[in-house]
Length: 62
Image (tube, rainbow, N blue to C red; front, side, top):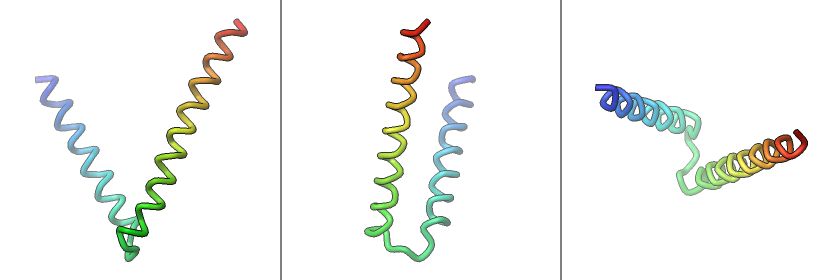
């Protein structure tokens, strides 16, 4: 039962994100919108790497 709820929650989040992306995109063509999305994906990647390295450095200091 918990697995089913988790899957439904994941699907709901994905639908919400997809709908939000469509609203934000507005009248921009999908071929142009990909540049925005790829930039955001890169920023997320860089942010995750930075946060991991920050935690590693803090752990080394302790």
